[in-house]
Image (cartoon, rainbow, N blue to C red; front, side, top):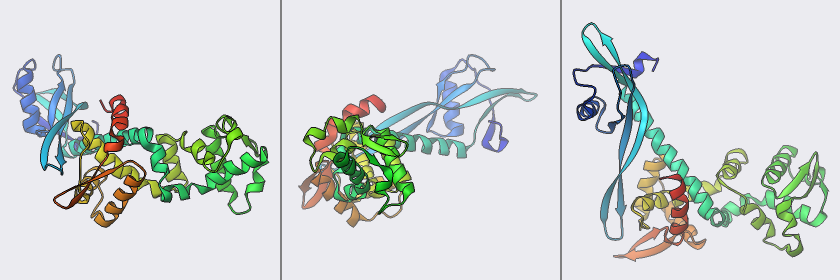
Length: 315
């Protein structure tokens, strides 16, 4: 902590070996979210400070509410200094505490997205709006399946050379095609499928090899962003369900609240959310239910697969 504006200094009169006192002191001075996660051995040692966040999980179907505590250890450090007036504790500013908490929340949300892609990525890619954006990739793969060996210049007719190069490099990286200089030919994934190549083969080859990193390339570098709202809708319900190990039934309004909470969206469009939920139901990610004439959706069809991935990453 070299920037003094990011620090606060407090007089400390307690015993360093008294963890209960030190923990209470940290909570009083920095806030109830903070706690001592690593106790100092002496006054020359750092104090590891962790954060605890309450996750309020609501089940719309039976209106139950549960509070789950999420613990993040050693998020930042404080330290002691000797002064003429006694021992002082130098700790992070309230701004830093807030920023660190939001960083942990965003990081957990992002990690959960990895689990979504691993457990149901192929289903997300089946969504018509998502699939249509990937047509340039399918075209390249199908051209190669027909021609066997192909010079990349034959594909430039309807596309810019920069895009064709990027798409071809991407397909090479995931093993669908092989690219050497400007020559394209079937990669390992295609070779195993060529004897039974059909209308869905290009989609199958690509979708089986897309993980979180590849998905990020699709929407951040290629601009294929139609998948984002469906990825996020799936994620907020699956992640909240994971906290209580039970698929949660939510109304569109609850999806909207969680989009604000997890992704900092302002004024989510509930009509769009409802439409997206129906589409996710259509590809087998969501299931709908009704109570008191209220339509609700949950991730029940894919929850077990998500949980298997989440236990590797989120615990």
